[in-house]
Amino acid sequence: MIIAQGITKKYGKLVANDNIDLSVGSGELAVLLGPNGAGKSTLIKSICGLLRFEGLITIGGHENHTVEAKRLLGYVPEFPVLYPMLTVSEHLEFVAKAYRLPAWEERAEQLLHQFEMDDKKMKLGKELSKGMQQKVSVCCALLPQPKAVIFDEPLVGLDPHGIRELKAVMWQLRDSGCALVVSTHMIESMEENWDVTYIMVKGRIERVCRREEIKTGQSLEDVYFDITEGHKREETPNE
Ligand SMILES: Nc1ncnc2c1ncn2[C@@H]1O[C@H](COP(=O)(O)OP(=O)(O)OP(=O)(O)O)[C@@H](O)[C@H]1O
Figure 1 (cartoon, rainbow, N blue to C red):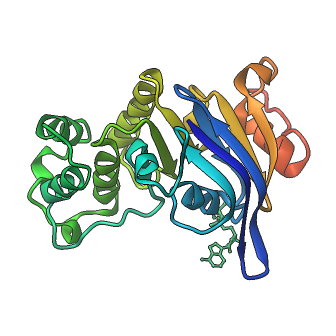
Figure 2 (figure 1 turned 180 degrees about the horizontal axis):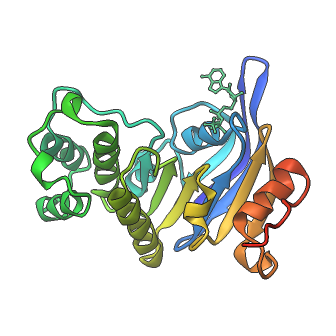
């Protein structure tokens, strides 16, 4: 569903993404890991069509800058960007109209309820806390029922209920056949349900690891530190 081939992105002389290949199928959850500055957000922005890059990215077989690709793709950015003078309800209405969604109201209600935003519908974007903005951003991305969703650090700023709900939503999306890419530093939060992990270091994919490849007792965190620090963490007696 999401295919990136030979992606190179330079900011001046800095090569932020160096010849990256990534492929995420329908019903697959890919985790994107890497230290600060590894190039994760750059890759995500390229996939979402927000940056110019060298290489080819397709969503459901459509080149990523096309309207067809954009219809299929949902994006939850690292930092939510809301309209300060639109209410929460108006944000969802705006998305519904932009995507020409039929009968979207019930789904919008259900999403807002799921993230405990029922009583915030009339609040303006500028009146929302960071976590509330994040929840609205998630609701807006999911309203058009995308077939592929990219989450950039989605759990940061959410309260425990929001984290639980968003994780549940991700698993539901995956089970319903959606392709997911989740970039995060909160490795533990993804341990339960990942299918493939891409570990980026200095603009390159250093390791692609499928769940079935990791050894019994090995965690995603272990795999990460193996790659980024070149050795396994010493196990503590409690692990
Ligand atoms: N707009 C920009 N102009 C110039 N350099 C940039 C720009 N955006 C990112 N970079 C650089 O590109 C590299 C990759 O940044 P990117 O934000 O993609 O990393 P990241 O893996 O998402 O990091 P983090 O985990 O800290 O969010 C970094 O060296 C960063 O300084």
